Length: 304
Ligand SMILES: CC(=O)N[C@@H]([C@@H](O)[C@H](O)[C@H](O)CO)[C@@H](O)CC(=O)C(=O)O
Image 1: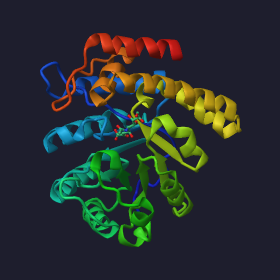
Image 2 (image 1 turned 180 degrees about the vertical axis):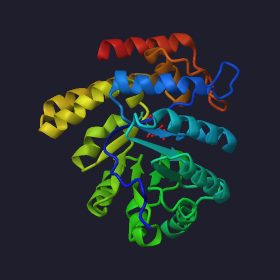
Image 3 (image 1 turned 90 degrees about the horizontal axis):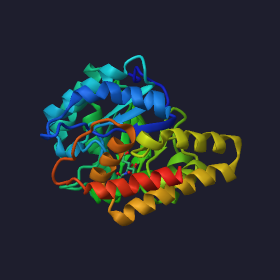
């Protein structure tokens, strides 16, 4: 049976941060205001929750369910799409989360490759994904490729070959890698109803030139309003304007990277720029000194 919520993902999708209290417990009270902020201040209409930015691998399955439910409930009728990442090391946990995502009205699910015992071939990875997708056969399913973190360097082009026969709910890829040849091959070999989404914010324009249908990223949480202008400029064929926004993103991110940029730093930057209390990151991520966040915030203000 075809997935019920069958609409293509386009435009910018914010990979959301997970709010924690100062004691390190998940804090769902921030999720409503967070969604207001994305819609009203950043022009972001879709979210990707419990992903890398959301520290999913540091959360319990129970916490992930509570968070997914709150994001879906608060976004209902307001946002276009809520995609819930359900990837885990155990296929059983992933199936549990996939079933749960279907129950709470998510618009789609995504799965990263397991990375402790790594699939060595596209075939094994596809088999893992098939098992997860079968737990929520009516939900659009996306493969979330992020080799820099998983260490799984299987060609995505090989993963998607004929995958619609294996996983009828397959609807695309979130491609967080720099191999633009593999990315281009995904675009040129995708089915019309699939979305191929690019996930390296600092290189988005290259992804768009290669045919990305949209983009998922962490920085769209706080610079989405600028990046939306990049998308419009690209659509109008104004590459000079599109490049100038991309170069600003690169200036900010290369500055932050030199100071040490990880999900924890990124989360604190988001708190600083949005005024939302997202709390500290969870171990093994550690909070970064306040003066460093101030330097990055200052850079943001001079660049944009
Ligand atoms: C490795 C990583 O965290 N990549 C980010 C990017 O948005 C990244 O933060 C940005 O390009 C800056 O490097 C996203 O692709 C991750 C993401 O979408 C997610 O949180 O699931």
